[in-house]
Picture 1 (cartoon, rainbow, N blue to C red):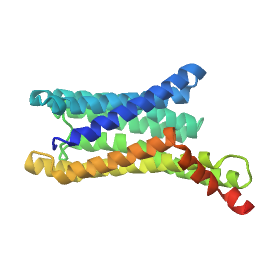
Picture 2: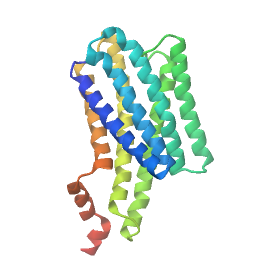
Picture 3: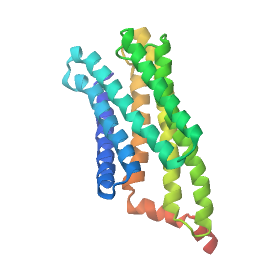
Picture 4: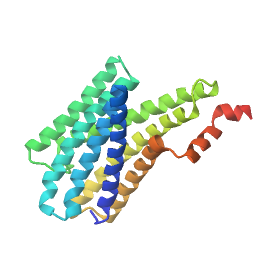
Length: 247
């Protein structure tokens, strides 16, 4: 990657870790499992991103492969509480959701273990079937998040119209849906990026720009979910269906 590309990833790592620590503190304070699961995912994601970028930050090329592998393992570990979060919060008691979470986790684990067995420690070989198992395992949960959050937003909007919930809750569902969709887009973007890397041996400027752009969009969405400023909150409240009908 270009020398500036790791800055986007380190920024992302800091934001993910900050969000994760905030959620873990809430979980400890209220003894709530959902916050603990989601917080664990974000903290582990922050650690994973840091592991990937440390060799480039410190300009130690010999560290890249072992740190990249460590980042993959930590990220895979973080997906497990994320899958449990999706099942627990949105589909508690639904057998199909349990199977979906288990399938995604098994695909991720099988892809990672299979790639390790054949010596693919960086996980960028599109010619390997193990890559596609792992890719599906970490992409499917975000497609699931986007789908379920869009559905929850539609229901929340109905409740907003009759005053049973606030517009910010409906908006948070929308933001989560966008976050999931952007993460899916980032996974899809890896395919041409890795294909280009296989041809040239380096990540090109366009792949850096694409990765950084999607990462920034994800960070912006998370910022609005957890740290929405007053101006944004007032804008959402002013545009709510209930207020529009009142006028």
